[in-house]
Length: 95
Image (cartoon, rainbow, N blue to C red; front, top):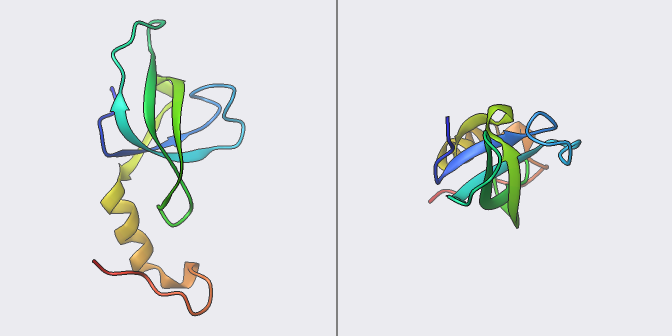
């Protein structure tokens, strides 16, 4: 299934050999550029463990190797429910 804007993906070696170190990636845009069958260019943000964007990237990945984790709001809500995973004294921001 093709990712959509706002999806948070787990990107690993299964998506491309360049991702030996897996990462979370929030999709901004799925390009309609011609590529190999089953592959796609994505624009988005690499996320840290708290679900915050740390770097904007364009990645070329195999669709079948992507795993959907949720959407950006899902990640933030999950982290807010688990304050023990945060450094001492750091509280979740509420919006």
